[in-house]
Length: 320
Image 1 (cartoon, one colour):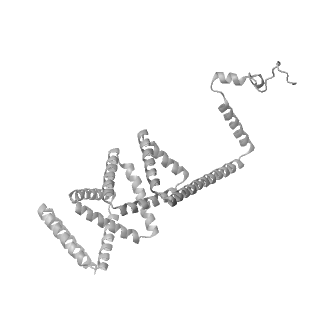
Image 2 (cartoon, helix red, strand yellow):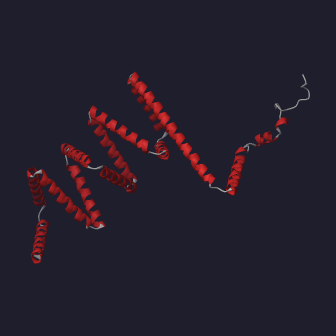
Image 3 (cartoon, helix red, strand yellow):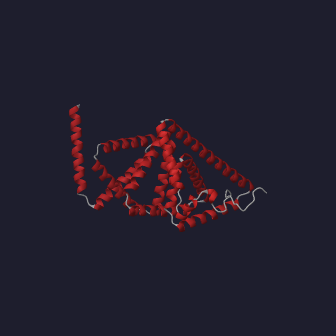
């Protein structure tokens, strides 16, 4: 049995070498014709296969790709990814608008089916990997690449917004609000301050004024369209949110007090005296007058100051 296996491997190697030699000698037209024939044959085969056969074929392809990629070195992987990117770019440039829409629709359907069948653990692993990849990718890109990426994203979003219906828009906005609400609820006070500071620091004064004006107009439009019940609901939600923030702030202050008390309870008497001395010295520095005139005025004893309530005037008969 082993000799037959070696003969089979040898025969396969000779066949692969022969195919490589044949393909290296074919012209561009012959290669395009061969690839087109293979695509037609593959499409016909896929159309006639059953669902179990398709799943088995996909599973075999995944296993074969995983084995091949596990055995390749870092340079081979980078070369493969570079070739894939170039092929994708050429493929995207050559496709028409209808082909692009068909591809995107198929991708969305495939992603939807994949998301529905994944477990909670698989979803968390996928999101974690996406976050890590998104963090690493912007760090390695240049300023020009970043600007090009952001510009392309804006243009794509504008086109997507123009083609969506009213129902799709409402569904998108509702999903965005829910996602933003969950994100805001899970962030800490420090993360919130950092996020707001980063957003405010990047805008100019003109952008700041435009943002406030747009917010006012947007709020006025929304409030002019709401009825009395929605008005009461908005006020009630505002009160609840204010009470929630106030309670959260009180809890944070209480935890801070407990933390400080625990730290101070572990200090010795010498450390406590040193801390109090440092506090007194700092308060003394803060109480010093900045101007010389103020310092001269404050150096006079309080009863001797002019128009002082404690000044004793001999011309007044205090016995009356």
